[in-house]
Image 1 (cartoon, rainbow over the protein chains, first blue to last red):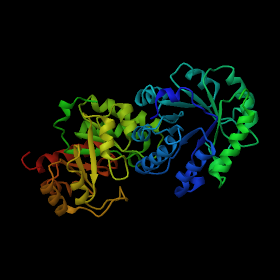
Image 2: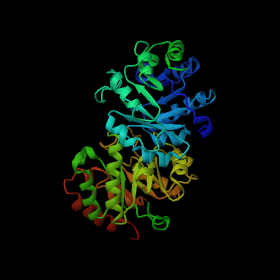
Image 3: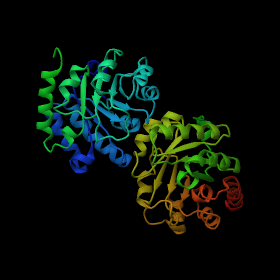
Image 4: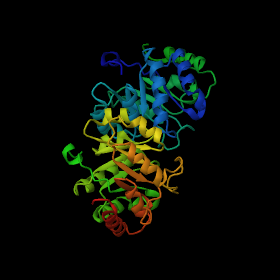
Length: 219
Length: 219
């Protein structure tokens, strides 16, 4: 884990969520490597379908390459994997460990991200020791099918006016939708297919980062 | 977690491994409750197919009913779930977190069980801080299909003569095979279908326990 000082100003602007179904199992680590070289600022390792041993092997490889570049690694759902590999944090949602227990197990220095699908969830979580909200989904998306009604840009803007947490928008984000999403108040955008399914993760990450830097207000 | 003193002489003799596919999801906790009343001495919660949130809810319910009866709860594979619910230990195998990392995360007082499928695996693990070996499988079994060649009674007897660890035999154990398995040197027998699929978990556990008490040498 990197120290808290380096995490106190986490740059959420381009947040990659991995999907081995898109990259192919054998190219997952390589895809993250290229995406890191292309400029992603945070990586979330999300994996549901392989053994714990394999998750730990992959996440440890990814941790090494990210930490060599000063990029934080967040693990989706699995606090055991995060602790085993010394990841920088976990991202949890309503079907995962609750964020209070996750904080307790991960310690005060970890990044704890929490998916909010409704304004009510966000309000209930506002006073918890959570570092950022994953705002999910912004638009409809084929990547995740178990999500609720999309927030839309209006919903995101409304949430922005009600919370002090950093907001990472996810769901249907690509070069066409990112500028408006940032203008609506997102601190960063999470992408899956825009990098994992592009076949050119370095070039895709670089293009997205260029777009983000010209779209973030006051940046 | 119960304190180490109460765990220092764990009675592995009748070790229930849960299978919600056999009990039905809605009757899992109830099955464990009845099995506990029938005399099981350890319970391993093994679940692969539900969300982390649901695992934690179920395991916490099971922890409560077991701890009220002084029976330890071990979680299969998932150190995160074990830590979240304050289980007494974890059971890991070759596809899970390695037992050294599991010990580090669970702490010195936890029970760490490790599945050994070959004599070589057992020899490599002999000096590790592992509390017992799961000897898997003793016989062929329909419950787990990802296991190696069965140990058989000869293999178990051979392992018994080479290790000082408590041995919990698993795979194909029922009223017909338990007596010989205990005579071959097992400290306990793990059952899945003999309790989870019996429809009468309390009566099944009681009958198995009676059989075990008359079969264990010097008991």
